[in-house]
Length: 94
Image (cartoon, rainbow, N blue to C red; front, side, top):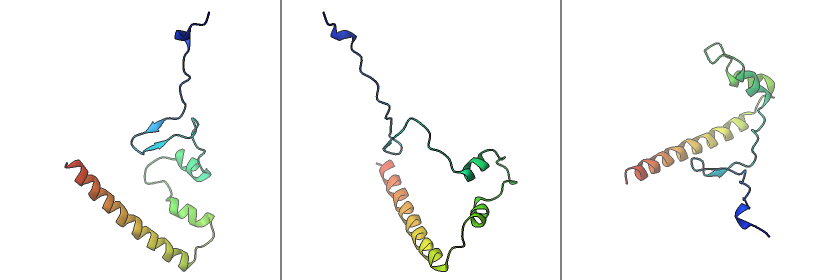
């Protein structure tokens, strides 16, 4: 005879994060870039080289147009984050 009480459902490996509102796609950590791995093993004090200096030497020089486009996007992101913070404060006061 078949006993249905012994059937167990396999637990899903996808985990949901209420903080980010996203699901983990893989149970494995995503691989870090070589720059991140270099910094991971260095001390976190002021002796660490700034990531911006490293990235400037390892990539081609960006153009003024690229910098202008980046600054426009940065301003939009900052404005959006301010709006999000205001919304969050309004929600927390409810």
